[in-house]
Amino acid sequence: RQGADWWRGAVIYQIYPRSFQDTRGDGIGDLQGVIDRLDYIASLNVDAIWLSPFFTSPMKDFGYDVSDYRDVDPMFGTLVDFDRLVEAAHARGLKVTIDQVLSHTSDAHPWFQESRESRDNPRADWYVWADPRPDGAPPTNWQAIFGGSAWQWDTRRCQYYLHNFLVEQPDLNFRNPAVVEAILGEVRFWLERGVDGFRLDAVNFCTHGELKDNPPRDDIREGFIGVRPDNPYGYQQHIHDKTQPENLAFLERLRALLDEYPGTTSVGEVGDDDSLGVMAEYSRGGNRLHMAYSFDLLGERHDPEYLRGILTEMESRIEDGWPCWALGNHDVTRLASRWDAAALRLYLAFLLTQRGSICLYQGEELGLTEAELSFEQLVDPAGITFWPAYKGRDGCRTPMPWQADAPHGGFSRAAPWLPVPDAHLGLAVDQQDAAPDSLLNAYRAFLAFRRTQPALVKGDITYHPVRDEVLCLERTHQGNRLLVALNFAGEPRELPAPREAQSLAEAPAWVNGSWQDGTLRLP
Ligand code: TEU
Picture (tube, rainbow, N blue to C red):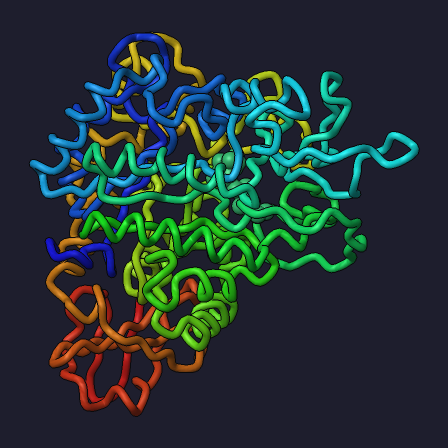
């Protein structure tokens, strides 16, 4: 696990620091809280952590609006805490990856403050500024992901600036070489501090497209994040040319920087109509990103044909690139409420047997459900804008329940920024620790088993056709060969094992069920 390519097949545990563990009593999690819980994280048998943003921020998008890339927001602690966190994680064999939100900054970032001062200051072209149309309207019809025009009028410059997300998240101008240099300098700061890698936020949004109207779109891709005809979030009807070819030059610069620090890695978040194609393009060739992930398994569809379709398409397109898969994150409805709550053990086996690296989102290992919040309780601007068609992301961001009988589930002694749902207390870590057959212990056991199987960590993969809602796949690495049979039927299934698998030993190692005389019996 310790070589320079430790990230291939690694399992990365995503921490949303705001909601992990509060030690200061302000109802918001902090870096010390992460340090205090590292033993828990190591007990899961994961390889790395990914920390969602903890940088200085006005918190309009809860940290994805960075106003100082090189510091820790006081609500989370200090750089000294961060250094201690890295040291303590490394001491437990855990790699540390951090989020880098490079496509945009906060409007409170000094770069933007300077840029908006005038049309001819040294940072005037650091963001994407454009004149209005003759009638005063925004330069293009592009829509922001969080609603409304992607252009915001600025009264000082009498120009519009581009924001793909919130008004408070102005888009950096990656077509300006000075911006690319500055951004690489910010990334180097964290490499020097000893981080092992980066999750690159909305990485295909960095370079903006030609400023021209896009045609309205009438297609809606089924199964994609929150996309329904009545739901504008993620539909982005006017920004579907976001993945610009010029972005590749930036990725190549970034990779050259990372290669100066052997053993570091990168995973790019890709949101695109052809996200699988972009994942392949961004992770292929060894000179761009190490890995990429998309929202393809984060939507509502979870039937085995759909899942197999995504995964086989990825395999056919990725060549020497490397995918990263997740079934949950801080942007989507919790897995236990999005897919079938009765099948969480199946999904864990499904996720952890795919080819690629894996992200687990905090609380997924507990089977946490989406919190039901009223409109008055919402704080996510996306939810506040689109309610009730789309309820936003607060429901997947409520605090970790550590102890069933402690106030606020042991997360904080103060009222947390989002409530700990009563329904989560029975799923708290202390309850599941004590129950040998809990979901938490199933994750631990499967992750421990996975580590002993090189075929699951870095082996090749082949998929058999789905039969009777059973998805069979094979993983092979040198002498290590496994047949994985995943029963999505919701009831027991009996079927002949795929003929190609007959040469395997008939000894199911972990999955319950049996395999005898060529017949698979799956509960
Ligand atoms: O999310 C990016 C994002 O929202 C898009 O990738 C979008 O979801 C996708 O295109 C599907 O429509 C990241 C962060 O994860 C999120 O929390 C931030 O709010 C966002 O960037 C802005 O920084």
